[in-house]
Length: 196
Image (tube, rainbow, N blue to C red; front, side, top):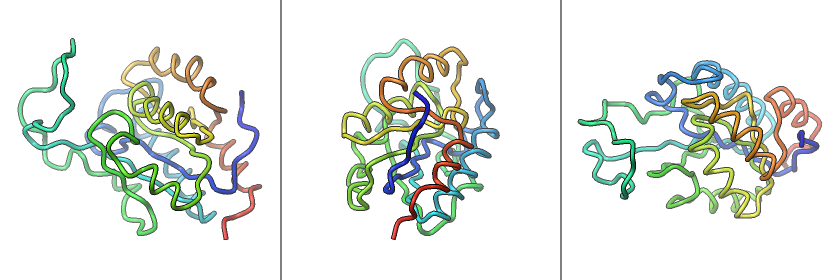
């Protein structure tokens, strides 16, 4: 269902828009395209006095604090490059933004994201970032389970695989909330009463 409204207490939550993640090949949008749309959204939310949350994933250089368990796809060998987990420059450096650091796919597990949102009275989250079917979808599912209204910005996210992106956008997200484009969200935000 296309987005119909934004709550007066909506936050923008940007997932893993950091150096190493944005630099990876992605589809259907490039990392640069996603960052450009995220910058538009963040500017609109900041201008409206609404919270902007920058979520980054990190791990120790040796990977010793990575989630445990067997997977069929091995983790990258060797140490992680310096600065890989730094938020991209186009989004960083705004003192009013909230930064959340995670060590797993979703932004809620093992972090203070829910606490940060509830302290600000947030009832709805707009989600964007990389990768659609991993970090963004995991966060959307948890946000829904925590009782937030969920609005994925479908053109401000991308995946390592275009089919995985489409599966999330067309089959999963409509079960969790209302989807929208960057332009639709910015248009609705402009018609929403600013936070006082």
